[in-house]
Image (cartoon, rainbow, N blue to C red; front, side):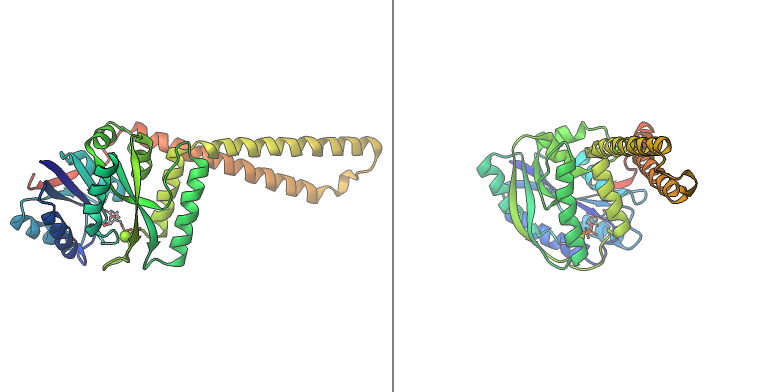
Length: 311
Ligand code: UDP
Ligand code: MG
C-alpha cells in the first residue's frame, strides 16, 4: 500500500483550519488504497490555530503537527513539511481552501496515468483576488521566465503532488532561501500540469500583504537569475558609450569653439545625477546578491521546531 502526506502550512488560520481539516479528511477517507496523513505546519501562529489543531490531533492520529518556535514564513513551513514527510507521495496545499482538496484524487490519477513524478496545478481562473494581485502575479511569472535560467510553468503556485524521488532530491538542497516551486521545476524528471479553478479564500485574510509579495518575488528572481547583474553591466556599458560621445563632443567643441564652457551648468548637473543614479542602482543590485551570500554563509537553520504532535 502506498502512502501519502498532505502538507498544509498554516499561519493564523483559526477561521478556516477546522473546515480545511474536515475537507481534506473527507477526501483522504475515499482513498482507501492509500495510507494517508495530514501534516500541518503551524508557522508560529499567534491566534488559536495551535489550539484547534491540537484538539483535532487528539482524535485523529493521522494528523501530525509541527509547531515552529515563531513565524518563519510560508516557504520555510512547506520545506519543513517536505523534510518530515516519510511517505511515497506528498501533496502541498494551502490552508485557506483556495486550492480545493477535492481534486487530490484527480492529481493521483494523473500521476499514475502519465507516470509522472510531479503533477503541478495550474490555475485556469482565480476567484476572490483583487485586480492588482492578478495582474502582478501574471506579470511576475512571465518576467521570471524571461530572466531565469530555469523555465517555470506559468500561473502555478506550490499546490502540487510530488513523489518520493522529488522529495529525496529536494531534501538534498542546502540553500536556505527556498523558492519551492522554482526548485521543484529545477529538479526535473517528468512534471505534468493539471488545470483547475482556484477558489476564493474560504475565510480569514491573506497572509501575503504587498510587502511579503515583493520580498517573495525578489527572492525568486535573485535565487534563480543572474540577469540583473548582467543588466547592470549593460547599463554601465551604455553609460560609458554616452560618456565617450559627450567627451568627444566637448573636446571638439573646445577646439572648434562651438561650445561655451561657462554655460555648462545644466548639462553637468544632468550628467552627474544620471550617472550617480546608475551607479547607485547597479551597486544596489550587487548588494542584493551580497545580502543573499551573507544569509547563506551564516548557515542558520531554515526553521526551528518548538514541538511536534503524533510523530
Ligand atoms: N502561510 C504560512 N506562513 C506565512 C504566511 C502564510 O504558513 O508566514 C500559509 C498560509 O496559512 C496559507 C499559505 O501559506 O496556508 C498561503 O498564504 P495565503 O493564502 O495567505 O496567501 P495568498 O493565497 O493570499 O497568496
Ligand atoms: Mg491563499
